Image 1 (cartoon, rainbow, N blue to C red):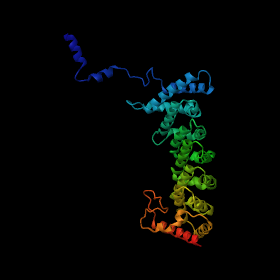
Image 2: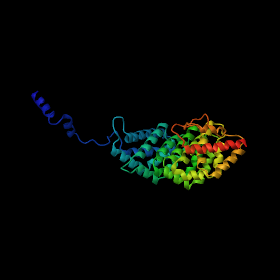
Image 3: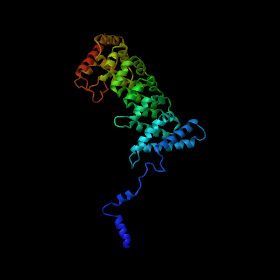
Image 4: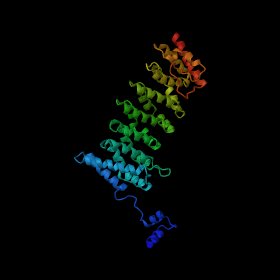
Length: 379
């Protein structure tokens, strides 16, 4: 008995805590236990089973299960679990395997073959690995920049309803990085956005417009350079959106146009846009739209165009109003602009959005132009 107590006493020595002494006697545990596969094994299994899915033979059910398991294991390495953080070493190994094996490309190419939950996992894995940084470097951004067909496949995804929304999420994550946004902007596929935003499926069209807007507003200097170099091509297509039969497309396009031409980085674009009388005439026609919201957005663009227009353009606008049989509400009641309240809307019944306070110079320009239009009506 005393011998046992003595042994226990020495084991529970006050100098060295029990837990620390126990850890000293244990061998160093490996990063991955036998029950958990390492990144290289996960990548190999996933790639092999995706190849089986591509063949569409009798083994696809089993392969689909293995793909789901592998994606879950991959997501656990990248994101960790509720009780533990993702292991840095394992994340680095997995990222390197994704690049060297070409699996990142394969996941996008075979996205339609993966089940619903698997598609969500692929999206999460892609976005997570894209955000990964080593100091100031973003390895995945560098990898995609050298493999631009990944972006091409994501853009093409809008043509496949099963994966369109997933591709949209991944595209917007890519657009956060300027090098990738530049590749998309200057690619031949950029013009496809004008087609995607008018797709008959509302969810896909709305998602495509969200990506389109993000692309044109996130990196100001890059976008200004792109629009200057491709002005005619872009605005020729953009005009079609402004005349779309789809109410949502027309309104969103008008609102985005207002944001673009009022951005200080796009001053040269605004100058070029308002120098063309056809653009002002288009805004005037939109002022006559049956929707009050379209009228308001059009007036917002129109008044800023007039503010920066030359006197000759303003005179031409007066002539057009004289020849127009139906008048916009803003031109019918120019006196509403004379009120002292700076938040008074130029279009009766449609308040100015919160935070917008027109300058006296702008108010004077709009009042002058509207008064001139009102006089023309009486002639």
